Image 1 (cartoon, helix red, strand yellow):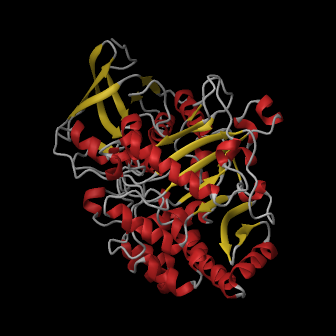
Image 2 (cartoon, rainbow, N blue to C red):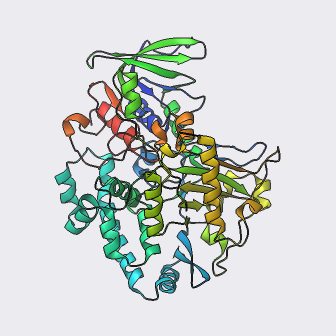
Length: 521
């Protein structure tokens, strides 16, 4: 059985994903004894890089893949050797009108973006509306993003800080669909705007719960700009740097240790039971930080779990021998795939896909978006692959809730993947499958993950990439969430994963905030 350095730890962290590692590094740097227990044989959780294709030197961000919500403060505080790169193009959305292929290019300079909007809509109106809309969200981002690593504000405190009633109403009070329809006339532009409200979130534009607004908010506030950046070296570079920082500060990290039970009365040190390949063991902690979902936390405490959340995405990784040629010859594929390449994401298409999925049917026209990591950061590919012009593609499909895969996950995955690639092919001058690389066994380099796959591999409840629906970044009930939004009914058990208030995405924010709560800040 494992032998640890302490009989009683100041802090035991359940789960070695990026948030748990952030918490471990902060606490160990403060001089506390820290132990991280991770079920898998490696740290990183969903924020890892791996070589998924046999015999191919391509280290892909297998699950999470872009960085926006990670505060520079955390990188500085922990002295991380980690960097991101900006994408020169924000997005490209292909379309066909009057039988002619075209595309909306956002990026490459203001004049090119303005011209692209004019070619799409025939006037300056949509571009001016775009500038006004994102000018407003940009000003809001500058005010909201810094609050994520501060004590949790109340609703009224955050509202006063934003100091823009129109922006507050648009994002915090009314369904986002209303603002999208008021600002934009073109269906394609409306769809491009709405997509940021639907990443990992199954909702209609006019959903009364405003879950789509919360998703949109987190997508536009990142870094105070809303930019989504490419992690140099892949997402695993971040979690490797975090693990190194935690260990350098004195934290112990034990992989292959699955926590199965937490026993505590909230006042005296907690007993944490774990399982390894050789049996069970126990460790005592003054504080337990749980880098797992709220549902998993309830199960560890022996309590009735909350209603299971439901993920709603398809994740596809591909390695290509070359980028495909486009039907729209006015744009270089290196630009089109360098940003976010939107597929079947018109406003009405998104509404139809949601309606079909809500009735239990796979979307007939599956919406998705793609980007190419290796165009911005070729370091994830071996030198030979770079020299031969190989490229990666990461695809994220929308409106595919877990319920659609429950009857036959494999069959539904294959049908959905085929339909999704067909929508991409409609805008290509050659089938995407003709561009795929092959692994050492002669198989095409493509893999797809459904919500059920993510639940099985990563213990994401229902395959939900945020652990549960995203929260507003303010206190709904401060007495329950505590000063930092990480509290539980037990004073010595804190939630430091994506399911905490202000959790979700690759941010490190819940890990930072849980550490601040422990340290009494």
